[in-house]
Amino acid sequence: MLVRRQSPTIESSAKQTSVRSGLLPVLREKIIRQPGSNILDLGSPGSGVLDFLAGTSCRAYWNTTRGALPDQLRRQKVTMDNLAMLVDSLVPQKESVALDVMMLWHYLDYVARDLIPTLLQCLIGLCRPGAWFYFMTHQGTGMPPASAPLRVSADGTIAFPCNQPDNIAPRHPTRLFSDWMPGCQMYKLHLMQNGVQENLFQYDGAAASTLERDQIEKSSTPSLVFRPA
Amino acid sequence: MFKRSDSGHSMFPESQETNEPEVKETNKPVHRTNATVGMQPKAGAAVIGASIHVRGDVSGEEDLIIRGRVEGTCSFPKNSVTVGGEGHVKANVEALDIVVEGQVTGDLHGSEKVTVKSSGRVEGNIVSPRVALEEGCHFKGSVDMNLDQPKPLSQDKGKMPTSHKKNGNAGTDQTDILTRPSGAR
Image (cartoon, rainbow over all chains, first blue to last red; front, side, top):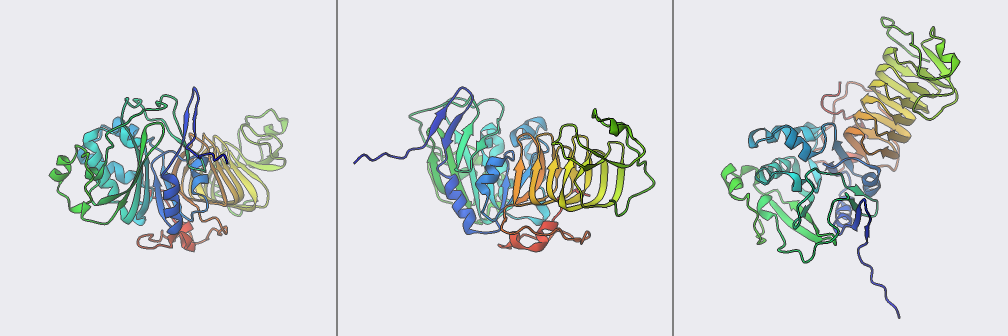
């Protein structure tokens, strides 16, 4: 009997690469299990994401009036001191919303490394315990200088912009971002076929907000060893 | 078709961007046209012209195209409302079908569908069974994915947003759809 193994689909073209996500379906299940979840999508809104979230009984938030997050950081010359103010502006209704899911997509790859821990801490401060963080990272060849929006399909397929490398293998070492995300536990990690790593973290409500700033600065270099918080 | 409008502002539209001869009739605040610029043609739709500024509650039972400015509320529960590329709406909009090509500050409640075109700019919450956000549109607000039953737009204008904190069923709360984005009006 011929058994056809189902594998992630890679459809490369001159314009974009489509890869099946391994963690978006997992995240969707988590959202469905918690009706009424508040989701902040830091990407650009599109019908694909809406289709993906359809039927999850969630409430999704976007704020694209100032452009994508990395572009804002670059344009406004954000420093550690005014980063929190920018993060506050990302959430349309910050005063009345505690977030359950944060969709960061691939934008951390375009943020200056020294800003990432503080940025993540600010974002964690918007969430309630148990919140999920989904983001992608890429190691290997350099990322494009400008962030291009991803296109997400209802089935969890992600279409990357044209200048993403098709395939990078082997890709190692695996980077784990537990040091970047105090108070969060890594739930799952998935390496997609185009070399992009998906990460799903859960905020466990630990004392992320009480971390001293120097602790964060010390941890700005990502650890290669997974240490549960 | 208006319940109330502020007569302190000019209600006379300037010439419209269409080749239809009837648009030159500039002595009516709202006129009908069979062709619109940059929008789906809607036979018999009423048009608020580009020079018209309405303050108050706008309601009716016919399709509406907004090319001017509207501040207040906009209620067309059985019809479609289209905010044209040059339209500015600062109001909660309730309609069967809502299409945004211009700017809207306020909540959109479409009992069938809400579409934000790539040129559209929305600051507010969207509640509708079907939502389409075209790539490139500017959107600040939320989309309620609890699509089982369309919810009516409340008339309680002064009600403040309810807290979602620690409320696992926040999305099912009727008052949630009243939530206004910060800075919206």
